Image (cartoon, rainbow, N blue to C red; front, side, top):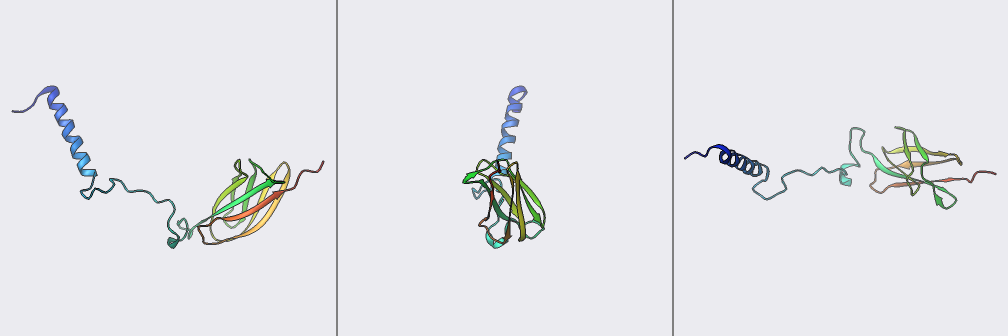
Length: 135
């Protein structure tokens, strides 16, 4: 006997849902979806990409011993990049290996430091102390 009307539609949707779930979940019980790996292991060379991998850099901007938020930090010359410091005075970059000059600029003045970015998952830390504004 063939179901009709509302019962027919409900049965159809229930079977369709079961088939979709059965098709998505592998028999091995593994997760039905692949997870995206955003940070490859060190053996794969940094964060990948066509540029040969980029690596973490933290530029720390302070005025005296206090972190300064909202400071623009620029990394030049190779693949120039700009970031703004957070509430902890940190501007985060992902850069390809090479030598960079980091410049922090705000109303208090400018601070500059040089650093070499190397192939490592440990961030390169650059200190950029701003001098107090002369009064």
